[in-house]
Image (cartoon, rainbow, N blue to C red; front, side, top):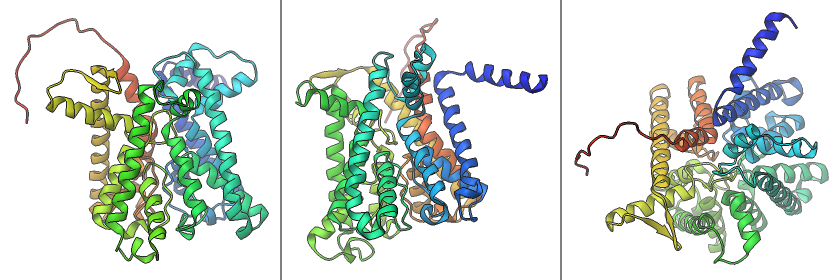
Length: 451
């Protein structure tokens, strides 16, 4: 290597090492997306109809565990390409630093403070303690759930596709479901099993468990009773159950007679099964058993709201997170009741947490609206359809009304940007929100009129 190349490499490493932990983490995700793009573009990964833009979009969607696609994953990519997508999903879903820490631990290499700081940001934690325990818990949960999920899915796929293909279908969809990715090797996702009881139980339960968050699952496994659970766990359980009931009931009521969705299914239980799946999948899962593009406008709007809320912190899900949504509701109720303190389940919520929630929500709204505005300028498509795609990208959901595959190059870059920020953006913002500064100058209070 020449001196100039050595100097450039040293300068690059030195620059990266000086980045704040969340910015460094975002850089690592960007590097993984780049590596995935190159691998998916190689001849052994596809059947000849995947260009650089297609590879970049697919790699970004996999690393950010979104599931939006511009080419059919099952027919465009070879087994090697599909395996690369599965690895990208697993690494993006569980977290890059989670894999790095596990590898260092296996090699007996101690984990230094810089690595712990980055891992804390990757896992969305506030403390540096017990991160190693959390990493091991994440891998244990992922391994157990994915093996059980693949075994149950094999009961359906092996008789239909044979041993080799059936097992691979089961493994791929198990990884995709647990990581809330929504990637499917079938061109119509899981529509072929719209009323199949096992598919409609296994797949939703996998992305519901992972969407709760590894901290919540570990807390439940440790205590097993309601009283000793943490405030975060209680809020996640109540919020998740409420949103599942709301999503399922709303979809059933709004789409029951729609001939393009539930109206085409015979029988009460068949319709209810399909409504259950479509009611829970917007929680960043991305699979569908019905034609999403045939939904009524009111159902589309309801689905957009669920996609923006997303799942839980320290999970494979995206969105603003369930706890953020709950704190917003609690803050609103406290304001109208003239309360100065937020509390839930016998615990108080600090005002700093409320300020953080407001900032995260505001930035998220700004990102979604700006992306939608630019898409409306550069793309000649329906407002509701483009809004659905942007919400799906930001919430890393993967549901689509068919607009993503028809976007131009600029439109695809916008969706790529939104998917990336939807995965790593909140981490970066959280870092700056967590940085405290004491004001040197205090100003007298002023009055403004609101509302």
